[in-house]
Length: 106
Image 1 (cartoon, rainbow, N blue to C red):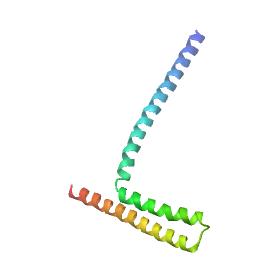
Image 2 (image 1 turned 90 degrees about the vertical axis):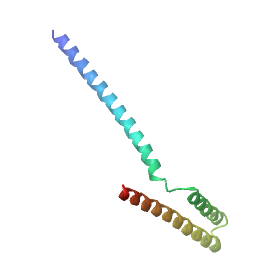
Image 3 (image 1 turned 135 degrees about the vertical axis):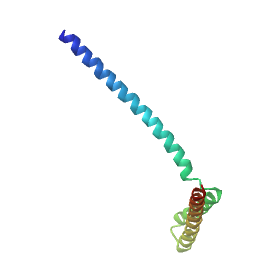
Image 4 (image 1 turned 120 degrees about the horizontal axis):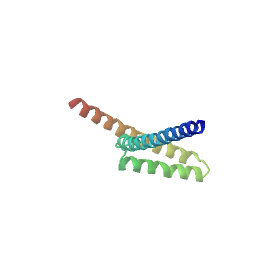
């Protein structure tokens, strides 16, 4: 009789653990789907112009690092970096402005 109760409690314990495991998997799936959708929403402002600006910034940096960190290359890199960050900042700000305006209209 006692063995039957022990087996029942073990079965219940196993079933509870299995249910917890499936709940965790389902929640993980839902969170992953949400993360993917927010990722695309978060970076919609990043376009070809931003990508080109970043690539233009990388070239002078590589040149500066390869040529022994001369002053000319350093200045060129900092100029390109400043320009790239300005482009990215403006694109992001414009996107946020458009999104807020569209939500206000709705």
